Length: 261
Length: 298
Image (cartoon, rainbow over all chains, first blue to last red; front, side, top):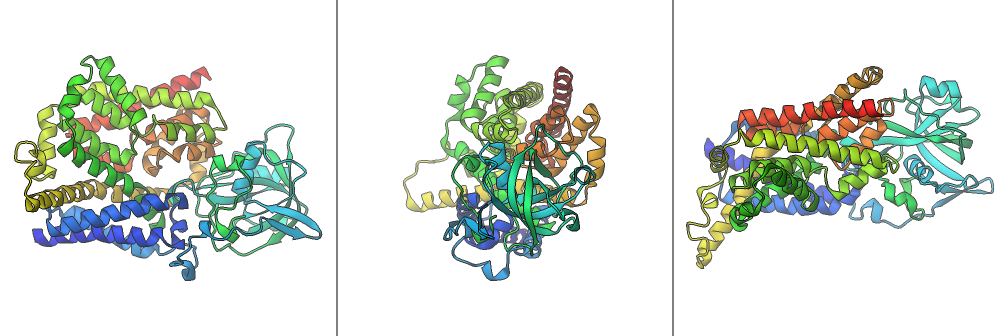
């Protein structure tokens, strides 16, 4: 029995390593982790494969049924977790989205040109003072309503932003003011065209709650995104974005391929 | 929920493996006895070395537990090792920078976080040092590592025979896997519990209760324990609690890196029960008290 349990333990470590290795090379990685950690995950995966194999050849220590059970549960969780919202055809893509060809950062509409920027990136640009009022933006996100925002005649447009992993993702975005904004409900995906205008004083919204799968949300409270047009859209292929604050000071850079705005 | 739990494991596994392997490296190749002799014997000096160690040798909270246990077993004073274990995940440039950015350049918040974590870590280290006998730590080490790893220096570590060397490498790697498995089971349990809390917690209630400062501090501390957010990202999560006072946001960031669900399991696995309780209760009380004090000064 001891030998069986130790063999299972070694197999679980090796299996976890192999899973992490495959995942680190797949699009589906972005459903779990910020792609900036791909290399760390791949390196750890290689390490787990090596130590797991060593443990299988020469098991060490005592057998522990509870330990084996815990790793068995992890195996089942991995099987159940699947690939998240990322489309299955992209799971084993050899080119991670963030390293793909950078698409045109602009969208033309009725003769006007709009810079693509997801709501989280817009938040960070505004925070860094890098979103001039004369710049037009196109941004896509989830609608979130609250009593405070309804009172102001606005709604929040948010996007789940993974700083490290899905567990600590934060829905970040902006307040949107638009004619016809009331027709959109919580959870609707919307593409907004417009520009950001600073407010005379901060307007903190304290009753926002979470958005979608993300229980934490924050919106920039010193500006409002005045939308010239709103379009209902479907859920993007990559619903999460991976904006890091330091990138807000750099040039317009899309980190998640075509979907990252 | 499964995806959240798996993402926590994916995030923490590299650091847990790193800590497990560093622990084995320290055991075999680092002359910690010599280092231990150079650590100041006085409490202030020992604390300072533990805190400084966190700045120059940062490691995630999952990796710091096996490493600290090994350092203790190799004769590093408990005050230094415990202070290092609790402070290293927070008092390092990466985490402090992320705190600075998450709070829009609020340097006071960064300094307050350093202060609260340093005080909590040092106080816990000081209170643990009297209770932690080196013998007990050594015993616990022997239970998880093969005999050859515990006595590498006295049983022919330098034999030139290739077969012997291969066997030793295999044992070293297998020991790393064993340590990973021992700590990893708590990581899996913590990740599962944390994902469940994240999905099922009534967030509107949390928001409603966060109006009162002292209650908000206690509530966000409890959330930090339940949610197991990585210290690199917790500042952004704390900043998202806009409805809570800054002192409560501070308490969330300060306690989470020292006490959370996965760490609780690891503490009870790595240390005697009394020490494990000390590692849980003292940082929590210290963070609660200091956060309340700072909220009065706001």
